[in-house]
Image 1 (tube, one colour):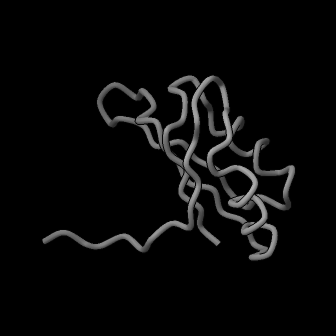
Image 2 (cartoon, helix red, strand yellow):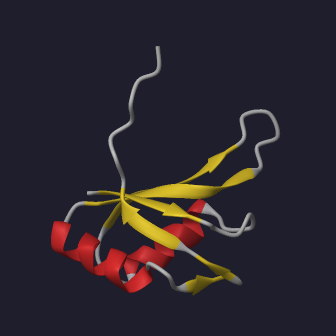
Length: 84
């Protein structure tokens, strides 16, 4: 299951994100989205978890929690809509 995480601290790394979600199960991938030009975090990222029950447990536990001084939002990621 693909999970969207927003309102992250700009200091949060992909490894920080992975460790946060590993407490709830196996993390297939975790990545912070960065600005193409500056390579600075854009404050959101995606986590992929293979087990749906573990992913739902992580979403329920982490949504609205405080991480690195910020209250994060965690939800199931929506499919990307292609722009034309």
